[in-house]
Amino acid sequence: MMKYGAEHEEHRFGLCFLEAESRGQWQDVYLGIQLEDGDVLPEGLLDPSILVICNGEGEIVQIVLHDEGCDSEFQFTYAEKEQIEKYVNQHVSAKKTTNEPL
Image (cartoon, rainbow, N blue to C red):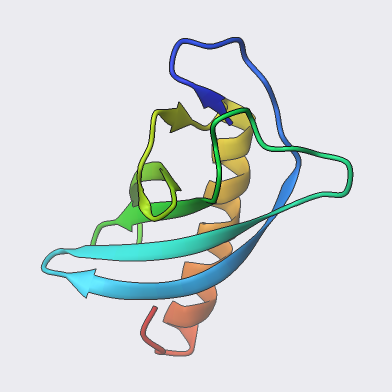
């Protein structure tokens, strides 16, 4: 997680599913972030969470880093995005095979 235009900085965190909701042709998936022991948030980032926007087939269209529930001036690194994509793809696949709503 880093501010737009700032120096590249990787953070170690776990993810947890919070909720999902349909919005027309889009599926919004909300995730929580749990920092690993010893890791700290970048300065200015207070309460991060993640909005993952998927299309009707469950493919990820956009990943947004929220702070205190709103869009923020922070973004994820490529490795962090890969971690989020992997988590969502596993979660979406599991829900689709059991025919449960996301």
